[in-house]
Image (cartoon, rainbow, N blue to C red):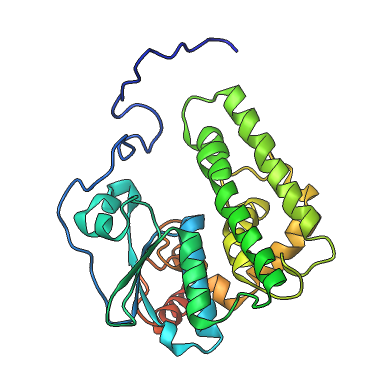
Length: 288
């Protein structure tokens, strides 16, 4: 190491110092301003952004609708985390942790708040009795892989993505540490997917929905511009699985929801009805 950092006896927060997210990162919770959340007409109100975690919830809703569950219609409201939307009083009431995605389930007399992407997937799978195995052994396997993703996400995003892609100061130890762990996790999944169509076997489940935005995004080159650096071509089973998941119409729609970057035809900042995608497709055809 070229220099050594000696931690002080008592840590002090240096506001607005660090990565591009330093203006919204802080060592305390709670709202910073008063503002109510918008509410649409459907039973489910999703507040999100098309990060890998946010995409999980949108993909789940689109899969439910694709399967014919008309009761799963939802409104997806844009939360611009770089602007601090997650610190409004309305959002903090929904998610005290101020992270996306977060969901109001208004389908019954008493509203249910659900935050954390894995919890949203599990809540919806149980509510609609789909995309989740029912036998004890298969259910345990599915939940194990769901929480494998929940536990591994911070190493990939807050670890590797943060130090490799977002920070101005590149710290070799940090990048090496999290690149190693990200590649190890890719190898875990690659071994699991040997001779399997989906993560848990022959059936598509919430485990695949949770894993795809992260690991699919890595091997498809959509995350952190790191495909070459991580040598993702070596994970053949993950690549085959990701290609299969990416071909699903519901996944393609879900990746667009609350997206505000990339090619204009891939963005759908807010989603309030199925026809929003039809209009977006029409715009894409006009641009050709």
